Structures are given as C-alpha cells and as structure tokens.
Image (cartoon, rainbow, N blue to C red; front, side, top):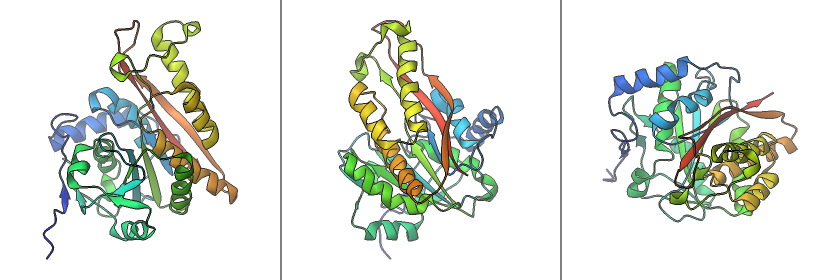
Length: 297
C-alpha cells in the first residue's frame, strides 16, 4: 500500500463558507431556488470563487444551468493564486472532501492528461492552500446531488500561461469539451479594484467609479461572449483588467475555437454580474463577479 495522502480536506470550510453540511446545503438551495435554468444543459460555465457571502448568489446563476442527468465528468479549471506555475498542474490526491459529500477525481482522465507531458503535480500543501478550485466543490456537489455516485471531477490548476500555451491546452481540452457528458467549470472573479489590488483604472465618462468598473468588466464579458481568444488577450493587454481567471478563460476560449473549426455551433451567455461593494472614491475597493454558461446547439 502506498502511504500517500489520498484526501484533500475542505480547507476553506469554516471561513470562506460554512463547515456545516446541512447549513451549506440549505444556503446553496436558497440561492439556486431564486434563479432560472434558461441555458441547460450547460457544457461549460464561468463562475466566481470568492467567499459565498460575497458571490454565492451570483454563482447560482451558472450552477443552475448544470444538468445532473447528462453530466458525468466535471473539469474544474482554476487559476493559481499562491504558487508560480507556467503550465497546468494536477492534484496528487484521489478524493476532494466537501461538507456535503466527498468528490472523486477521475483517475482515468488524469492518466490521459499526465501522459501528454504537459502537466506537473501540485503538492498537497499547494492544493489545500488554493481556493480557486475548492470554492466550486460545494456548488458542484449540490448541483449534482441527485446523481452523486455517478460522476467524477477533474481538477486542473492553471498557471500563468502564455498565449501559445493557452492555445495548446485549449486544443488538448477541446476533445473533452466536445463530449456532452462533460462539463467545464471555469473559475474566475472579474475586476479587483482599489489600492490593495494595485489597480485603479477609472473612466470618468462612465460616472461613479463602480460604473466605470462595471463598464470595463462588461466590455470583457461581451468579448468572451464573442468566443474570440485573440480579442480577449488584446482587451487584457489594453486595460490590464484584474480578471484572476483570465488564463482558465483563455484555455476555454481556445478549446471552443478548436471545436468551431470542426463545425460545432456554440454560444456563451453571461447571466449575472455583481460587485462586492460599490466604489465611489479612491480609498474604496471591490471585487466583481460574473456567472455565465456555454451551450452547444
């Protein structure tokens, strides 16, 4: 028997969200019950990864589009916040714990990905320090609870990829995105504004600071809806918007582009936008959240 640790604990439970299973379930249920499922079944979603008090209601708009009757594998692409990573990394455990129930990593898909030589392994420490994937686990568990023994997850930590690497990883993941039984969860917040984030872009023509932030975010969101990775890269170069999941989004857009070349017809729609608070002066700070879904026609 190998003695490696097989479980990743829910390290942010009790701080970023409640550690009580019944309480968490009721909270997620509450947010989901207020939302319409207009884009089911989603093949991919973009949703935020902040504490649930900030973004739980926004994220519900994306998770409501997940169809548990068709979804069997859930790829979760999250950005790396704590370790420098120039490629993508796979977990070294087999089980991700949540206060609701444990989620199993798909070892077959992990084997296929590992064989490409494009991935590294993250340590358990890196895995448990990172919140960008974990914040999607309770929502994934909740959305899938009616079929909880019938699906696996494929967590991928996405590094600070160059445009050419985003293209390579997009190409690699495109064959998985083509499968209707797979779902891609792309983890990203939008603008982090204020001195503590060292970002203070302000277009006065938009009025108050929070309106300028919204305008900037929605410009990016509409480029994502156009499904054009090059335009998205150009937007980021021009405005430097602090979208922390820009690389996972870039990988998704490149995967979509690859499938469109093969004649697949897809559309992406954002369904909700929110800010943690409304910035009105230079001392303020906020983080923006957006939720959206990709449909294949």
